[in-house]
Image (cartoon, rainbow over all chains, first blue to last red; front, side, top):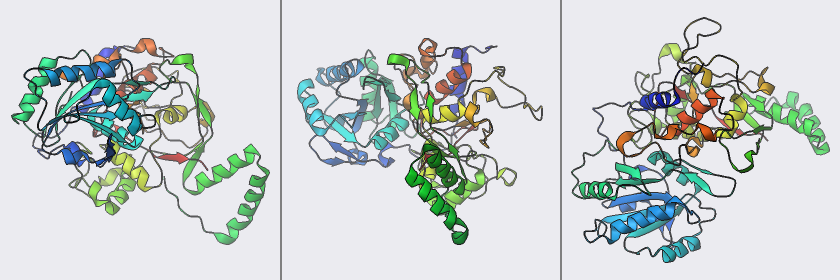
Length: 199
Length: 269
């Protein structure tokens, strides 16, 4: 009875989503998302406070043993590269999907363990509702499983200075060359705004 | 969805006293009948506590409990959504922020306050998850979670998995994948629950991670990446469920689709 192959079917389902009006130029900016966060120093943060910076956003949690540390390490390679694209007006933003266990203390410990530079890395914690909203905007899927671990997407998102998604790619094992190209493009703002990535 | 106060004082008072006395007695069946009345007085239906077997394997493959709910009998209609945007102008088509909905939000409406006259009682579609969540919140309720939705509408069916199954009553061709859009749970077979042949938003629609943790929004736009995960299914022959989980995982919160609406629910008292 299953005459439609699952793969073909999934593809056609996803195509439903590729709608939209070409003439629409209103920005789809994450800075417009109503959500509030606290950084690991305890300072309240709004995404729109970061207006003007190019941002690399990753959802993670500190107990994650598999892909998250690899993604963070990949971003560190990018950061420590001799022609680093990270620095003034380009920040790395880690947002925990496990606010219950990732207290500010846990985030501070993570920063120390992973040696995350204060200037370049922002570690954020918010309510589970705000996390769900941010994930819904990014197309990031996650679910807490029995062990208390999370099954989750493995995704790095690049936002331009206006908070629009200009690039997304898989984190661990992703192509760092493509990522730094995307960041450079966002820095020089040659990426057309308002379209976002439709993956 | 709505909490219309029933203030027929004199008529209701004896019933309330009776219920209160019975509640003090604490019998579960009495609590259930009280909950039924509370749901019904708000125009909602009572869905008793149940269990849900997660579609994807996890340690132990345990069933999870699902708490009783007061559930909207049918998806939210255009007329109901019109009332919402009247009182919440920031969710009108011309005003909504692009981060919360795609440009074709409420595409079938003629303007901000004019749904098509012939479909006022039809489910509202072309609504985003953000808009749906806000509607429910404004009514003191929320979107059902995946496990809740699957508990009331995820029953397996013996109907053929035809992509365009004809409508049983009228013989008219149904929407594609109608067979996957829900079947009433066995204990709700005689309930008024309406499943309207649309997909429905769930609060945690983005909680299914398919195909090794790759999300849908990957570089290269390869939307097929997440579709190889049948081996993790607890019942790989439940094609309809597989479709629902695939569909949900392919969504993003701002997506607005022709065949995607929503209903609200809240915890039963």
